[in-house]
Amino acid sequence: MAERLANRTSGVPRGLLRFLVLTMLAKKPMSGVEIVEVIEKETGGRWKPSSGSVYPLLAWLHDKDFTSELHSEEMGIKRYALTEKGKAFFEKQIANGRKMLNKLEFLVPLLIGKFQFDPNDEEILARTKEPAQRVVKTLLDLREEKNYKVTEQIARDIERILNKCADELEEIVRKTREKNRRQSG
Image (tube, rainbow, N blue to C red; front, top):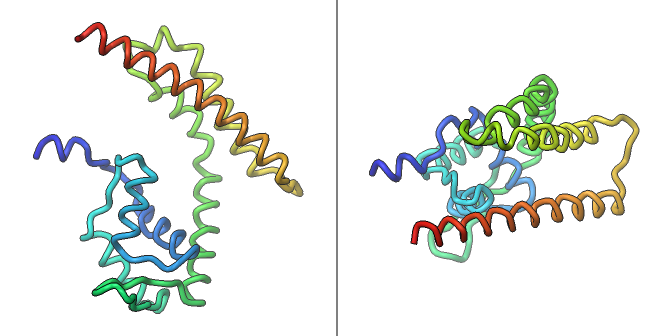
């Protein structure tokens, strides 16, 4: 039980689940089970919303006429789709989210720098803080550029660069894990 509680992500920002559910339903009709599975998969298993939070939210969205129920041919499965009223509500949520991000994004580089590593490793990894902050800040800056349209080529370039960085970091983690297993084994 204690292990299960330790693996649970606490402190998920209020309203995040609603925003994620609206985002998913804006793409396609989904059931509560599908929503839970997508969130769990997208967070690498770090967050699996409980049915006790997803289903009351779906009921609330339905009661407000933000969704309609689509009955599936699968026994007992209800999928929900956004109504026009729900799409308008979702657009308002996006606008509110952007305002909040604009107010808080200055904290992102600070948070990355302060909570990136174990305090015992902070001195060794001090040089990594600034590049990590630059990457996040640059992505945020790109979002904020006025009169700037991201082209397919720019998106591919960003994807290639980030994939290369992720691949190299994953290789470092893999080698570190192997080394630790050999030393402890």
